[in-house]
Length: 97
Image (cartoon, rainbow, N blue to C red; front, top):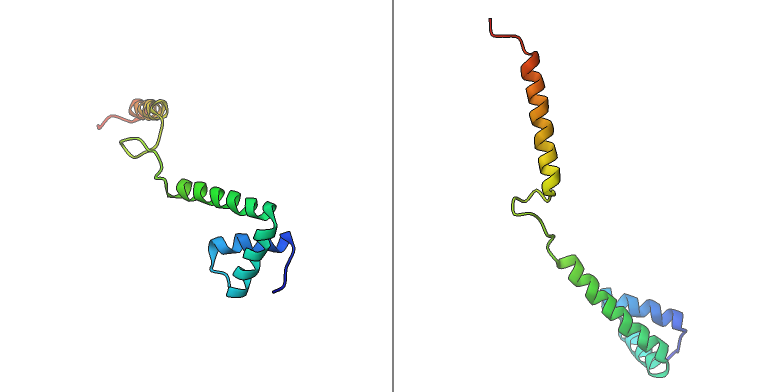
């Protein structure tokens, strides 16, 4: 078994969150962690970060009941602008005759 640096252990620790490690990588990483409290702590911290990110990514976005996601003030401002624009068009349109 070849022991490796903390840098290599960190790389494998990150890799193991995404894909399964080869048997030799798992064994070497486990041996390294037995001797290195810092890498053991890093694995724990990385796992916690990963869990928080997983929860954040899977949370549905909060939206208004009308599904626009717009603030009420924005809706009112847009409606008022449209009404004013439409009223201005009505004033400038020629009569039907």
